[in-house]
Image (cartoon, rainbow over all chains, first blue to last red; front, side, top):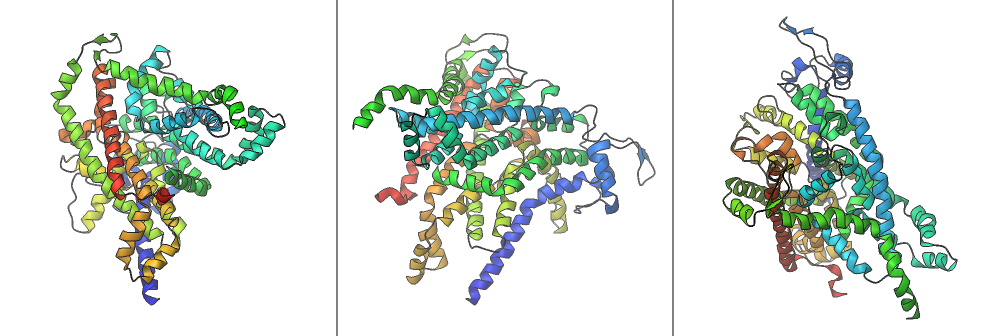
Length: 302
Length: 299
C-alpha cells in the first residue's frame, strides 16, 4: 500500500512537470507580448518585463495604441512602433471580420448538411446505403494536397478565386468525418421512435427537424465546434484561394506582421499570436468536456 | 419480409436524396479532382496556357529530379522518427494519467491544449522559442551550461527542430489513448495481479494488446498527417532552411504549383503522394493483423 502511494506521488510530480512544459511556450508567448521591445532580448528566462508594474502600459502599447518615439536605457532616441490592433499596414480588425464571415457561413453549412446526410445514412433504409457509407469512410483518407490543384482550377473556372466562396461553399456539402460522427449518434436514437412518427404520417423532413435534431444537440454542437476550430485555424485554404490582403483571414494575416518589419519585433508578433490563439483557448475552456469526450469517442470508434 | 419489399422500391431515391449533399460534394471536390489530376499528370500547363498532353515527360522529369528525392527522403525520415516517438510519448502520458492521479483533468487539458493552437501561431511561437540567442530553449540550456545550436539556421538541426515541435502536438493522440485505457476492464488487471504478473508484464500482456485497435487507428492517422506536414515548416523555415533539410513533400508540391506554376508536374507529385499514403496505410493494415486484437473478433 505504502509503495503504491509513493509511486502515485512520483507519477503526479512527473505529470505536473510535463504538463507545465507543455504550457510553457504559450506562457512565453503571452509573456513576450507584454514586454516592451527593449526588454525582449534582455530579460532572459523571465516571463515578466523588467518593470512588472508597467505591464498594463506595455500591454496597451503592444496590443492597441503602439508607441511613439522613445528614449532607451542608453539615452538613444528610438523609433516607435504601431500596436497590433491599430497598425496602418496590417488590418487586424479586417482579418477578424473576414474570419468571422467565413466561419459562420461554413459552420452553419457543415453542421446542417452533415446532419442531413447522416440521417440518410442511418434513419432511412435503402439499398446500397452501407456500401456508399463505406465509400464515404474510406475516402476520408484522401489528403487535401491530392485534390488541391484541380480544385483550384475548378474554382478559377467559376471565377471564385479571390472571393470567400471556395472557403465556405464546399462546407455546405458535408464532410465524411462529420457525417460519420453524427451517424454514430443517430444510430443510438431508437428506430421505433421514427417509425411511430412515420405511421402517424410524419415526413422524413419533419422527423429530422422535430425528433432527430432536438435529441442530437450535443453531437451537432460537437460538429460545429470541430469545424469552427478547423476554419479558425485553416491556413492552406486561404493561402491558395485569397490573393488580396483585405480578404485575408486571421491565420493567413498573421504572416503580415512577420513580413512587415526587417527584424522581427517579437513582442508585437507574440501579441498578434496571442490575439489569434486567445479565442480558441477561450472556446476550449468553455467546452472542454464536450471537445475532449468527442475526440475520445471518435478516436475509439474509428 | 413484407416490410423489406415495401421499403426497397421508393426509398432508394429518398435515401439518395438525403445523402445528395455528400454525393454532390464528393463528386465535385474529390472524385472529379482526383481523376482530373490523374489526367493532368501527363500534361504541362500554367495559369495562362491550357493543358498540353506531353505523355510521360513529367514522369521522366520526376525520376531525375534531385529535389523530389530530397523531399521524399526528408518526409520519410520525419515520419519515421516523429510518428514512433510521438506514439510512445502519447501512450506514456496516457498511462500516467490513467493512474487516476489528483488533478488528472487539469493535466490532460494542459497537454491537449497545444493541439488547438492555430498552426501559424505555433510556427511563430516556436520560431521565437528556437531563436538561437534569445529563445527560451537556448537560454534554458545556457543555464545548464550547454551551448544550444542555432536550431532553425543550422542545417544539422532543422529536422530535429521539426521533430521536437511535433512532440508538442501529441495531446490529441493522448486523449484517444486515455479513453482507450479507461475501457480496459479492471477485472483483467486483477486477474493478472492474482497470477503474479509484474507491472511490466501487465503493460505488455494486458494493456497494450487491449488498446491495440486504438494504437492502430492513431498510427493510420499519424501516417496520413505526417506525410502532409506543411504549415509549420512553410511559415517557420521558408524553403526548408539551409541545405533544404527541412523541405517537405507538401511544401515542394505547393511551390511547384503556386510559385513555379508547373501545374502538370505538381499534379503528378500529388498523385505520387496519394499512392505513398495509401500504400503505407495498406502496409500498416497488413502488419496490424499480427499485433492488433479486436475484442469483438470471436463474436
